[in-house]
Length: 88
Image (cartoon, rainbow, N blue to C red; front, side):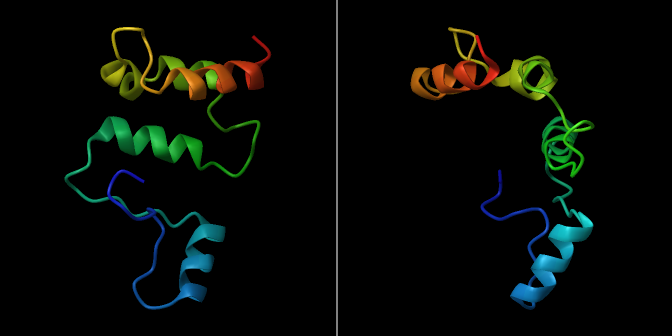
């Protein structure tokens, strides 16, 4: 996501990529920060009850580190859509 390819993308073939997705066999470059690895890993949890919530996303150190002067990392349109999904 941050490098131009998914953390489970296989080099050999499409079926191997599907297998990696289903088994959540994630591979992150060693140069990627631990904050972004944690953020992405917590978004890709299969169980929706265990997956990071919107509130947790907003408070995650990765998001806090990169928020803009308005307190957002993303554009107003996306932010408003996100708030609508949350019911705010």
